[in-house]
Image 1 (cartoon, rainbow, N blue to C red):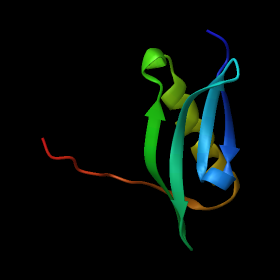
Image 2: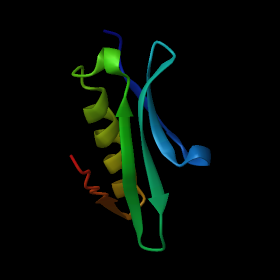
Image 3: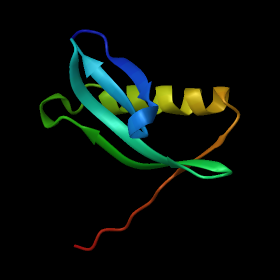
Image 4: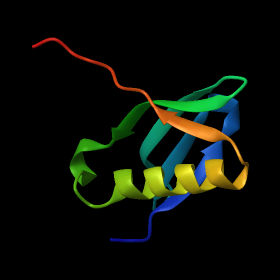
Amino acid sequence: MTAIQVLPDPSRLRYQASIDGEVAGFVEYIVTDELIVFTHTEVHPRIEGKGVGSAIARFALDDVRATSCTASLSRRRTSR
């Protein structure tokens, strides 16, 4: 597998991963006065389990740390 490239996409409030120029996954976020809250992560089903989600999380959290903001993970409960 080719390297995973992760870049910020602030106009869409997300970090996006691509492989060979195709979107492989993303994490969406919201920004408050004090926090960046990661609200949704998605990885393309055909490449799940290949480290895309981990690469997005690592890049996004490193970027937040570099900007001295505080990050929060949103925990949504789903009914079954």
